[in-house]
Length: 251
Image (cartoon, rainbow, N blue to C red; front, side, top):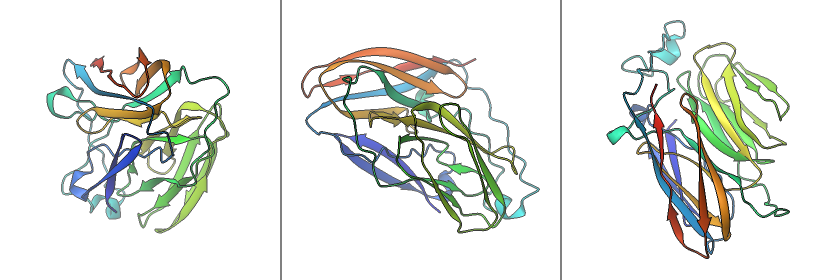
């Protein structure tokens, strides 16, 4: 199954299809909601300083069906680095500043989390409260997806056969919900659950875009599974576009 890279530009969602050979690239799940194209936009690039830690290779010898999907052993995805120290798989969202009392309907379009090659695709995703999360098993092996949540009710879903689908929803905002497989200890993914559509996941080149923001002052937070979090304040007037970059220190 092909992966997908999604960016949000001016309220429109752009989808890029990646081949299996591009599995190391970030695959960001879309917010998939209707936001006003008349709002403001924040764009930026996320990078890191220093030397990116080396991701250890995954030993998939116990699962021949998964191992056969790769020409070389795949590496873990804790740090996905692109050209010029670009940092992928960073969840960027509006932490504060959305007008009090403003609500946003949950999209009916599901965010898809696929288990393919004994890996989660995407590795980091964003989803709204109440939006369906469709969990797929593309592998002909047993997967058991476990959601380790605090604000939300945890779940544990077994999918023993290829082609199985399960749908779950989250009832409360939470950054982040850890997802893992009880059968394959190397499988990890992360879900950022938000009450509004103002979030994005950085692409392979470190870029992100959040669109449709009403006028106001916002606190943005950028979350990375290994490098932690950073915050920034951005003020939006009318339909203007602002640039806000983030830089993490590799350690």
